[in-house]
Length: 277
Image (spheres, rainbow, N blue to C red):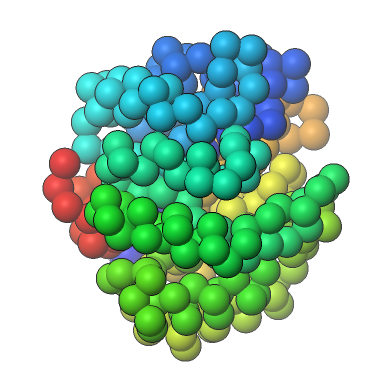
C-alpha cells in the first residue's frame, strides 16, 4: 500500500495518572513537551484533554487555550483535536472550548456502557455539540463505540448536522462496550465504506494491551491509527511505556512492516480535508 497512514497520539486522557505511569503528562507544560516529542516521532494528530490543578479532568476553556497556544508554537502544523468526552464535564460544558476553533474535536453520537458507568450522550447534547462544531469550523471525529454510532453518524451527515466528509474512529476494547473482535472490525470497515464511500478515511483505537493489536489491524487494512498514554500505559506486560513518543514509534514500525508511509502534517490535512495551518 502507498496511502500514507495518519498517526494520532492521545496524550493524556481523563483517567491515567502518574501512579499508573510516571510518564503520563498532566500539566500543560508536560503535555506540550510530550506532544512535541510524539510529533517529532511521527504523530500528526494530537487528541487533547486537560486537567485541573489537582490532576482531575476538566473542560476549562482557559486550559485548552493555553495548551493550544503551546502546541501551535512547538508543533507547527500538527492537527489539534479537542475532546468533548463526558469524563471532563457535563452538558454543554463539554463543548465550551469549541469556540477556540481547534482543527478537530471528538464527537460521540450515542451512549454506551463504560467499565463502571453509562457514557451518556443524549441526542439533544449530540446535536448541540455538532452544531457548535459547524459554527466554529471544527471537523468532528466520530468516536464509534458501537455499530449504531456509525449509522447515527451517517444519518447526521445526510441531514447536514455533520458537514463535509465524516471521519470515523472505531474504539474497541473498552470494558462493557465493543470488544476487540476481528470480524466486527472488518464489518465496521465495510459498513463505513458502504455508508460514506469507498475512499472515506477511517481510524481505529484499541484500549490497554489491545492497542498494538488494533494498531496493526488498522495499518494493515489501509486505515489510520491512534496510540498514546490515554489508552494504554504499557509497552508490554512487563514494561511501562517511557513516553507517548515510544508508543508512536511502535506504530511507525508497523507502518514500515506494511509498506505504509507515515503521513506528515500536510498529507494528513489533505486526507482529512483540513485547511493549511
